[in-house]
Length: 589
Image (cartoon, rainbow, N blue to C red; front, side, top):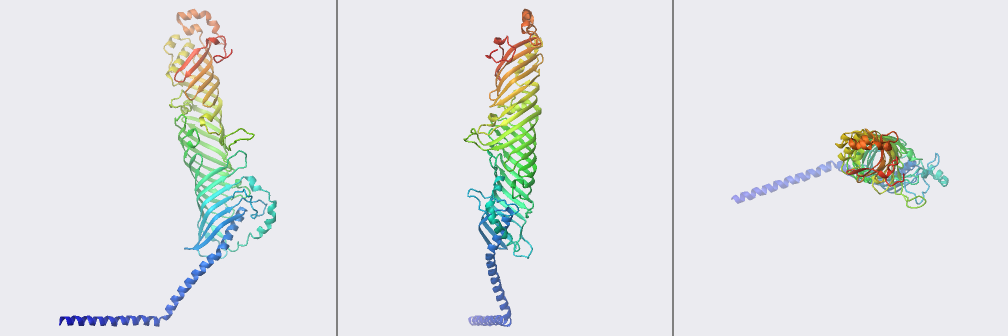
């Protein structure tokens, strides 16, 4: 009985479900029969959307040559040059995307007041601009007479090679025949499409600025990132760039405005802005080292930029010696952005506690291997004048010292000519310095030398008892003369050294590497020979005083100084007792 009940209940449920499903199916069919128009509308919309999509795809395909021609025309009009583009494609993906590859813009052929871009460049000519890829996005709306706004144009693999001015002035006789034809096509597409670019961003660019000056190397920059804004026909544009400086290697961040671009001569294109130079490694210059940072601003045209800025190198050093010194500069310079030549007018510098001014030029020269000129390496040729108005001799000597301990201390005034020719050898070996100097309040770091100076002063003043005890160990002296420095050796053809009671005239040389001394000259004392010796020996020497009294001095004797800075040797040249000039040992009197 229970089984029968359960089976009956299941059968009733199945019958009820079938009845309900049938009613639903009947209801749906009745709905579409009553609202058949809605089905037709939906089908029409789907068909219209498919047709519109197809039409847009066809339109985009057919618009490619139109847009390609408009881009080429705009570039040709702007640069007055022939433009080539390998490929160009349009796609519909959230708007209109355009992509191009293999863009080349050739240097222009100049004809006054006429745009000429149909003339073929010589086979050896390098394109002015080469671009591996570019892409931009445009909205799917267009109003006649209104520009199509491009929010950003993206570039990759940009190479710019700016020729010298002479190449912009090629003869244009052969171009005149095509000038009329190209002038007629200049405005074919102008009325159809007009673009307004809001910004341009470039990743990985390389800039080469060539020069027509014989023996000058081109200037090259690797630009990691470049952004241009406010791009308009014939106007200035804003820029932000991050580039790697080749030498010294470091990162330059700069921003400012550039333009308008001067087609006839890009060197006359105006530019203004500011820069920050970070972590510049000076070890790229053979012979020096240190990490430099610099900030400043610039203005002018590419061919003649006026740059004002400051630099800081807390660990400046000559790599051969390795003693670091803080170097700070404030400079005003004129820079030729076409070939990199720089004129310093002037540089105010502080090395340690020494203040000096320098001005001159730094130019790049190309190597000379053979020909009429002597072989010459390429690089930077530096020629400067140096005026040390408030200097300390220990700052400069410490820089040229392995131990960091200078030979002497004292106040320094110096005027000199500095030349550093290009070459593979370290800077301290290429450096040539010549000029005059004056040292005051001189004190020697070596106790042995300072003791001898104290003894010399005591005897010159006629105090032999003080001389036996070393005299005044803190006695100060002065020096003045002229010098030449080259190959790590300082030569002093006329050195006057003065201490209380004595004047010494010397000539000779001092080797920076090893501190070798090789000097000869005369010593003039206030006291006579007998007074310098003193005691009973002095009484015995009184008859010979008159033989040493010369040129107003109580005593004049020839002397020499040799040995090393740490172990100097002083002596009297008995073989030159009759002479009075600063002759070297072995020289004829």
